[in-house]
Amino acid sequence: MNIIYLMLVSFIAWFASNLNLAGGSSKLLVTLIIDFFLGSEAVIPIITTETLLSNSQKI
Image 1 (cartoon, rainbow, N blue to C red):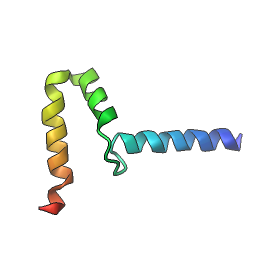
Image 2: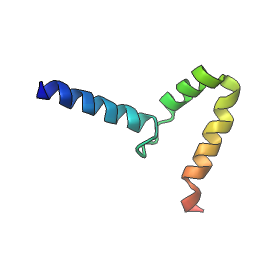
Image 3: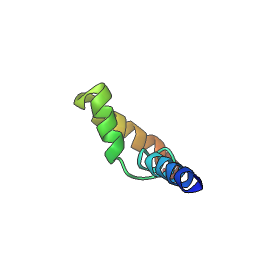
């Protein structure tokens, strides 16, 4: 049972990092989710805004 719990928690952590929720830099899954829910017209403005906001400390 512990191994199943460990696998589940590891998968959730991996998924969150790919969604850029935990500081990951992969935009692949975020792009697919935005495209699915909001359409392809919304992908570029949302990703651009997110990139500008996440890199604002470098300015």
